Image 1 (cartoon, helix red, strand yellow):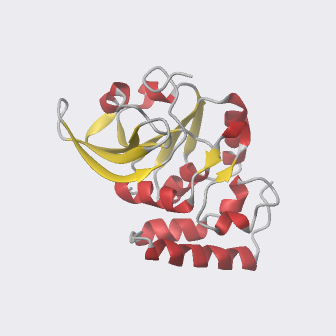
Image 2 (tube, rainbow, N blue to C red):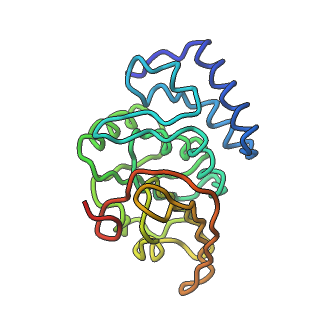
Length: 218
């Protein structure tokens, strides 16, 4: 059962949206999704007001829910259109998946940590949204539903996994943090043709490492 969404919390979301505008998020649809989706549904009880500050917060299994700016930044980069299929690598708390679905996307999301998968998939089932969850190695993608219009990776990778490039549609986009285990450069990947991609390096971020066959080893 979802927690109450009070007038105070709605007001804090409006303040958060204004803060994100000042930090450079200009996509009005993304900002509207941030305002509409209660982030406190996805954090530990007791952190309701804290979760409307622009900061990451802890979740289960020593993972984090990304700060709202990071969620908005990655989402804005993808230019999501209603009806598109989006593959998310790293379900985590489920907040990013719901933001994508709020923009009209059909979301396929993969989580490798079983306790997170179990908790988050149960939470996502309470939303009337087009989101499918899977427990597995996100670096391998989800070939049964490929190719995807967009791919979003919410953990830092040493390189761009080839499986994900292969599962991206021609003219599709992927956003992925690439670099060291502790700091990465957000990278926009555009698939020009079946054999060619264009990569654009954006800003520096810090994500948990992307673990898996085509990511970091444990």
